Amino acid sequence: MDKSMEIEKIEKKSVKVTLDKRIIAPAQHICNLLGLPLDVAINVFLYQVVYTRSIPFPIVLPSDEVLERFDLYQKIAEAEEEVREGKVVPADEAWARIIEKVKRSEAEQNGD
Image (cartoon, rainbow, N blue to C red; front, side, top):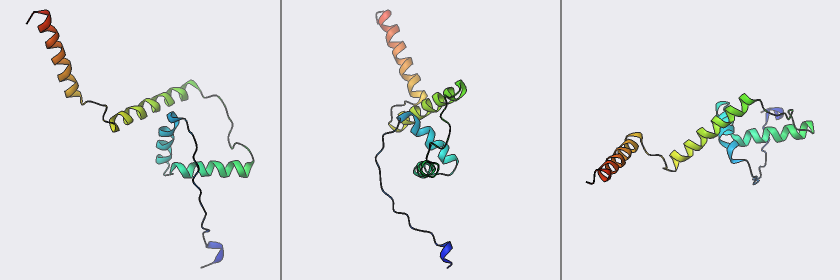
């Protein structure tokens, strides 16, 4: 094999970072759409910081549209988390509970 074609094994080191919980799920979703694991995307960012000796993009305030989209991603991520944690009740079960409460309330009002 040609030496120039050999892939150098890169040593990796785990680093604990604290991230805004609201940004993780949307970022993972976008990276998944791009076929890029989140850790690889973070490595790409860090390489660009080193190569350019700067933040590799302009830092600007987002538009209202972007903020609304971010809010939507946040709500979707929160809903997915609630489903994973079992906090969500199927609609038919929720309606059955509501109907039962209404019947009990009506019975109490009628003195039954």
